[in-house]
Structure formats: structure tokens, C-alpha cells
Amino acid sequence: MTRPPPEPVQLIKQRRDAALSALVHGVPYIQFLGIAFERRGDELTAVLSYDEKLIGNPLLPALHGGVTAAFLEVTAIIGLSWSLIWDEMERGALDPLTLSPQTLPRLPKTIDFTVDYLRSGLPRDAYARARVNRSGRRYASVHVEAWQDNRARLYAQATGHFLMPPRDV
Image 1: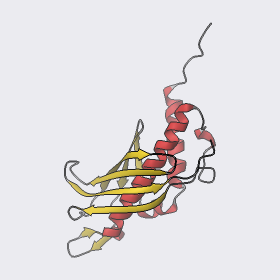
Image 2: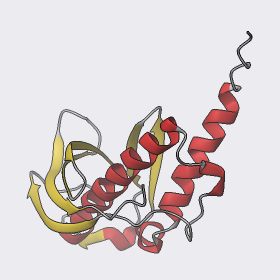
Image 3: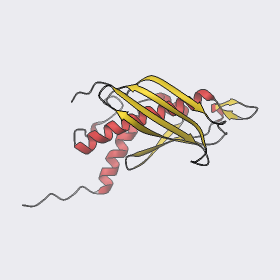
Image 4: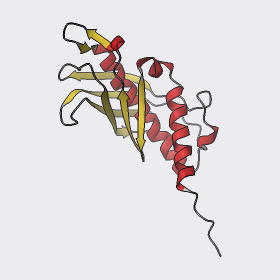
């Protein structure tokens, strides 16, 4: 009895990157803000690239608070959705090559979202990571942290609760 050879690592990475790309490109607002996601295994880091249009107070200058809140919320929703897609891909229940913005599972809906502004966002790139605290069939809780130059010096953090979309499984 012989076991089939394992898939090449590059092929697995391409499928995972294709799934993440489909997830991110399914939300036009993400492109408007200029948010990108970097993947390392199952961990995502959101990157908000600096743009002059993101400045709220030109006298400081500082990132607009609404942009910061949107960045954190997008990071939470994509991080939560990615964790669901990741689980389905690992189980073999989802073929990432068939994913497109039109065929993606529905995104979680925000119930509430609380942002803590810890300091002004400077006019430079920002980074964020989401941690799913709880994810059930109907409800999920996610914590997000955002920083700029130093991961230990957060400029904002948030906690959100989300209504999970129904699963077809």
C-alpha cells in the first residue's frame, strides 16, 4: 500500500494566496482605503499604506479616526473570515481555486465595535492583526491591535462582536 506523494508546497501556497486575494478583492472599500494583507501561514497582518487622503487633521498631521476605525474593523472581519476559510481549506471542504469575489461565503456582520484610540496615527504606514477570541455558529468575538513603527507601541485597538453567516455544511 503506497501513499500518494504530498502536494508541492508552492502549489499549496498559491491556492492559499488565491483564496486570500478573492476574499480581499470581494470588498471594494478595502481597495479604496489601500489596505493589503500579508500572509504567513494562517496569520494575517493588515497593512494600511499611507496616503494623503487618509489624513484627518492636517495641522498635526494625523490619520483620521474614521480611517483608523475602518482599518481595524476591516482587519477584524477579514481575519475572522480567513480563519473560517482556512479551516475549510485544511479539511478539504473548500477548493480555493474555485473562489472568486462572487462565490465567497458571506462575510460576518458587525454587531458592535469598540475602538480605543491610544495615540495619534502618524502619517505613515500602519499595521494590524486580529485575534479571534471566540467563534461559534452564530456569534464571534475578535480583538484587533494596530501599530505603526513599533509593535509594542499600539496606536489603536478594538474589540468587535460579529453575527456569523449561516453555513451550508
